[in-house]
Image: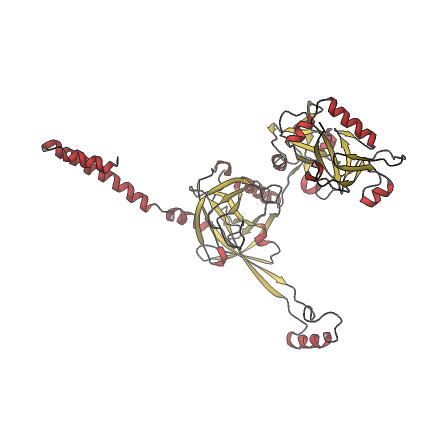
Length: 491
């Protein structure tokens, strides 16, 4: 029953003092309800916006773009009209089109009273000049302290006459889906702007190795890049970086790099002017359900090592086929989690890494290297004995395979010392095709044992069947890159 109907029925059947008491109670209830309604109607983000706006900045960058020196794009090279157009252009522009200055807009925020400013790397990348505009209209030139393209974060510095208003970072791990957030910045070059929404999702990955994005429906548009995403305490929980949109405008799907990622990057940029991430030195892939079954693992978790080039992991004794279950005392759920844990670890630190090898737990001590120094290194492939036998071809689970010969190695672009079985054809209706195997792939291991002949492959399959396995694990290389694939064994 509606509360109002209750109050009416009470007053109808009471007279005298009781009637007056009931009326008083009703009046008190009305007085209590109305202030609450008024408070709800007057709730506003204005006080929060006023508090944090002075720390948010607009960023304008300018870049000199080299002009064209000839009539490119007007007539084809070698055309009989080329000289005519060049002479016409030179008369109008001197020595051809002069270099011109291109401008771009973005956002940022001050994180210290002495003038450190955080923004996106793509906002200032390649800029010759960076101008910071503050909320009060003041403008200062900024210098780049350091950048990290992997997380799209840049750290700038301005020299001000006095202390600047600044904001602090919050612990982004405490942000919950549904929490209110406020985005601030310079959308579409319109100047300082505030939008509000909620945390729509956590731990989003776009394309980077270290991605940890907060998804929000707070309006984010071009020009908001590098601006802050605030919680209701006025602390930064993310840096607005990207939007998902079919038309370039906000449709309520924006992404902010989580503050716990940003703070680690900013700290290193402040101290070193560059990032210094830990490096384990392995190639890995996720452990799927079929891979876990093929390896006899209790659960599909951890990171499966597909290759161990020269580096920290090799020196510690790690092997291809190991499954990394724990790193520095923390369980490894998947490859993404491992990469982030390693990257966040100090260079030179010795950590305990627990791996599953042949059904047993093995603990290794690995002294981490520096990823930035290792990037671009080409992993070495272990050499095997040369095979003199004639190639044997076999149909295997939808694959046509054959022993590698010097001619096949050359045709496939494989190293001269590569050993294994070449896939020459794949049945498009097979499980192997569904799981991505293609002609030109090279199978180097089966059942976590090296295979160089069809006979060895048969033995590995037989051993898996004898062990009661439902599938067999293959190590496949394509253009040198390894990955494990589990194929179901025939009933």
